[in-house]
Amino acid sequence: MRKIAVLGSINIDYFVKLEEFPQIGETITAQQLDLLYGGKGANQAVSAGKLNGDVTFFGSVGDDAIGDDILANFKEHGIKTKYVQRVSNVNTGSAFVLSNSEDNQIIVIEGANKYTNIEYVESHLEQILEHDIFLLQFEIPMETIEFIVPILAENDKTIIIDPAPAQRLPRDIFEKCTFILPNEHEARFLFEENLSLEEHLEENPNKIIVTKGEEGVYYHNGKEIIHIPSIKTKVIDTTGAGDSFAGAFALGISEGLSIASSIHLGMKAASFAISHQGAQTGMPNRSDLGLKDGSYNYEGKI
Image (cartoon, rainbow, N blue to C red):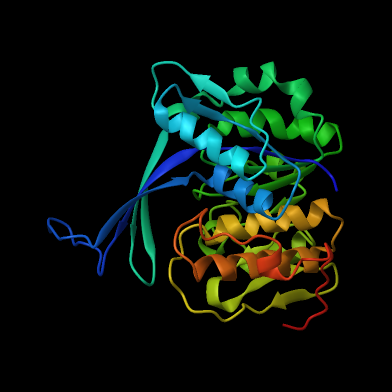
């Protein structure tokens, strides 16, 4: 198994359960409030960690009690936290998640994640380069992404980017990535070129892997566009579904699985997650996905 490094965000999520989302100017009563561990980077690390991946986290928390709790949670899931930065006089990142049975809306407050910057990466570069597979997202400064990706590429590392929240990815950075995991909405923001999704997939075989919710996942294998259907499940909470997919996909790649098998493993993890409450709390372990023997292979059958 190769070593996974997650360079990303850490948040505490204020999870508000609603029947319907409020309209502008409307005041409604929520059904429930929960405080849950979150942040796209942290979620993806936990996804891979709960599947017994060899995961190290690089990122930042505040010098507050929430930061202490988050680090303890990481360790509970086997994630190495030695290089997580504690930022003085700054709050740990936070997010307010409004969720009903069908969808969610999220407001993110950057907090300490702002300090996962170039200076931080430079100070840990030697330790970062000890890892093999890198999982990055867009909830840390984009300058950090633009700084580290060329270095990772020069060192022949496997670079996986989940381009969320949606924004454009500079072409030179895109070309250096190994895999990019947008959903259908995020895929529209990747480039300025006026090409269809199918054309983007064809031009980037085995690189762009697009998740389309209930439709499943699409990518080009060098010969044709491959569609891997979704796994039907009862939806309880969609929060963290994409992060479950990304973490499990990275885990599959770290264990030497094919792209198709890694995608399907990610889909199984996401399917399990949306049938349970909470982002990290709903993520599966190996036995939940039938990985008791440590092997997995997808051959086009659900």
